[in-house]
Image (tube, rainbow over all chains, first blue to last red; front, side, top):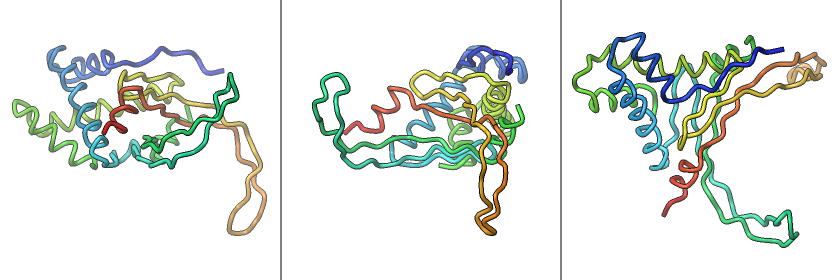
Length: 99
Length: 93
């Protein structure tokens, strides 16, 4: 059985940057925020984001389809939309599979 | 956008940092996420999305070239769920 470890958040990422590089806590947190917003902006503009060694955030356009309200059974159209998926690199897959 | 482009953007955003420092920040960022997933943990970045891992049972696969049957062992695979804000931003008009 896998031991249970907690959830990593922005604060933990900032803490790692602070600890390993000696940048201030506030600067470390600002850097984490900037990384996330720059990646988000690129995707908002329709770009995939490819981080070698880690993985690729891929955008996919979904066509309209008919869904159903599970409670009432009434059919409703699900509008076309863009979704974001993540494809882990082989390196990341191997690292996770080994545990 | 590829890693080197993200790196350039961050360098421009942070002129007080040397190029090697920006590189190191990015390495730490992705390595911490990978490490937590390798430990079986979860990574939650509000608004962006959450990374977790899922168990895949062992199964019988086939070598696509030879058609030979091979045993694929059980393993843990990465999983990502985009955050609410991200889903909305991708569909904003």
